[in-house]
Length: 215
Image (cartoon, rainbow, N blue to C red; front, side, top):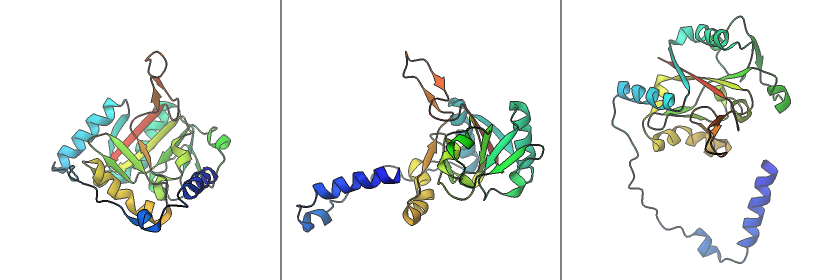
C-alpha cells in the first residue's frame, strides 16, 4: 500500500510540475456551516449508539472496566472461540482466561487467518452512525486485525462515544497528523448486497462484530 501511494503521489507531482507556485499555495476558504458538535446528554448518546450498532447487526454488551476479561471470556465461550489475537498494548485485564491469546507482533495475513477472532480497543465511536473508529495504534492494533479474523471483539469505553462525525474525526486527528495513521471506520459486520441485493456478511472483513461498552 505504501508503494502504491507513492506512485500515485508521484504522478500528481508530475502533473503539477508546470503550475506556478502561487497557484499551488492558494486555497479558497471552505464554508463549514455543518453541525460540528452534538447536544445530547451522555445517557442519550449511549442509548443512541446502542440502537445504531444493533441496526447494523452488531452485538452490543455492557461491561464494567474490571470485568472486561470475564465478559470477553463469556463471548468466546458462546461463540466457540478458542484463539484470539490482540494488540501488544491491549490492557492485561481485558485478556480472557481459558483462551489462547496471541499477541500481534507483525503476524502475516495467513497467520491472522488461523485465529478465531481479534480482540481490540478503539480510538472513538460515533453515536449517530453507530461507527467505531480505530487509529491503528495502541489498543486499536494494526488495521489487519479488524479485517482478517472472522470475528472482531471490540472494547469501547463510554467516554469514547461522541455524537457527531466531526467529533469522532477530531478524536483521531492527532494520530493522522503525527504518524499518518490509517483510520478504520467500522459500522457493523462486513457486508455486501452487490449480488441480487442479497446481504452477505463477511465479504471484506469479519462476519461477526461484538462490541463491549465499558462504563
